[in-house]
Image 1 (cartoon, rainbow over the protein chains, first blue to last red):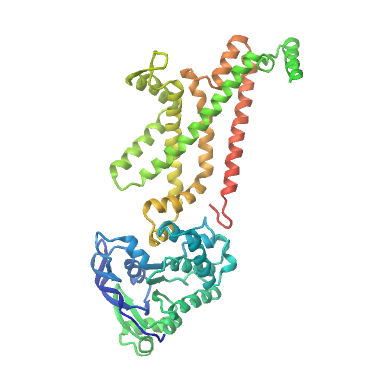
Image 2 (spheres, chains in turn orange, green):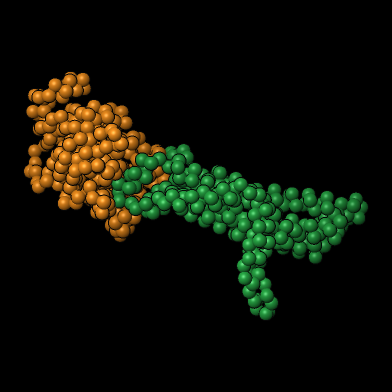
Length: 248
Length: 248
């Protein structure tokens, strides 16, 4: 993507995450600038999702620092609401609220958490659903939507909080190739508009196209990283090459 | 009405089948008072027991092990002892330990009368079961769904009110219905402490008119109807809360 990158918004500095004796993340540092789209790739169990979840404090880290737009995440006195207003996350399994319609799903957090006016929230939610091309599904319940439609509602739901950074956790992994496209299209548009995005993905083609920077993780560490052109053509590490050979 | 009364009078004289409440105004009033007491007692206890269940289920998820242990002890006590013994315990043991108060006529009376103790006792008894029922519903809500709420900035209370409870409630509605049916039938135990509910009223009638067999049949039919109405209401409620495309 070619657009101007701003100041650093997410700064991760030598974090470590342990579950008991198991080290899941080890000495990970990375910086994401405003407007940048970063993709994290790597084999299953390499700590990608844990890294992503650590950024909005769904998983507490054991050591190191994560700063999101000036907020230190690894802090016992962390203001979680302030952090989560800045960070939106979209999950692999969509995790919509099944008892509310698509429109209500998008409206809930601004109403309940931000206590915004209902009329404003509704208007904005409708615009967001239009953005992900689901206007005609606004009164449909998640259970009646396809996976791709649910995932796009989930994206709209996160955007309703006007986040500074969007996290995508293997958001197309549960989708068939057809519906996958719709979701990738929505993400591509977001990235093009200059939304700061961090994606964990297995879609190498998409990563190559949309990312400004790619990180390859294995065994809880960043093995190597670089701009997509360089990364996919001249991977330096044997481990990276082996992985790319398998998936490409 | 008069024709029906006359027919029942004829039935009593000609065949000895004496449904005195059908033609004797005094007996009928006694019976209807009993009926209304039972309905009132049931409704109050249903509402209070649901309240006890919600609060208990909330405390069961508390961080403090002491609070959780208290809820567990409460559930154990009311689940593992017979409701008639509980009622007697409240009415004879607890009541005696409480101070007497002066009523408007200057009489010394117990702080809580027999109806009051019946309400307290049955509400706690059914409430203990409701706690377990709600807990099963709450545990059936996928953690991914609550994680999504958390990621959107919901506090624990907000996520409980807007996401967990609406889903948990739908999941446990059939089990709740069963317990409420049991509660309605349990209200007959109030007979033991002289609350003028249906069984008590019926017993008054048959001990004077000596029509035990007839009143027993009337009593059984009345309970069949009351419970059928309750079950009908619960089923209607279930249908009302059904979410399109969602199988809970």
